[in-house]
Image (cartoon, helix red, strand yellow):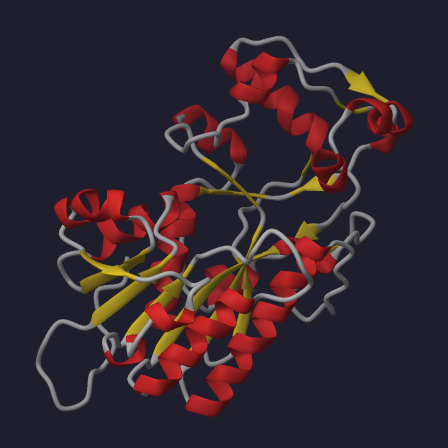
Length: 302
């Protein structure tokens, strides 16, 4: 883990980090950066205030859907970790727009790390590629992320802040709510037959948190990185591997036509995109050594 703090001009003090969207991954980041950083957490839930305060963080009331509640947010933090998802509908991300408008008013933010999704690429036919590939979103869910990325990179160019966009695939961890394949295996949810199957990408939640912290220290200006591990597996093979490690039956295999009749539109959308992410920037530029370089290692841990 990096041990050098970003330079804060004119002050010998702990830098301040604002976490926006402090769910499972954000809380893992919080544990990694304290006490080296002073941590603020934006929350729209009064019920979370005491729990956040107990971690040592400073809760800040505010709601990205209500820009008037964000006040002079930008004057409070040297760095921002933005993990809040876009709204569930539409082709743009007004939440990111509201956040950036608030940050711009303060003029203090030097670094900003954003958790995006590898879904911005759409279906790539199983190709292996790096971050220079053009985005080609096929769902509104992915279009909202493309819009957020564009807003963030523009913010970085306009303000001089170093913006790092992490394009994140499937996140898993044994202690993450809904984050282990054993739950899906127990339900008996089908996967695609080998002839129709797609390549899928993964990152352990602990490694993703470490990538976020490394990006806060080492991220280059206006840079995109794949926050993915080294695994190259088709989706069905991933669940077969997990079944063997968990001592559970392998999931049934069905054709794509059968999947259209049996599975939810959301699950079908994930089964319609195949890609293999190159993570050389993650390991080279951020100098991140993955704790769980393959899903086998990560699933054994969980």
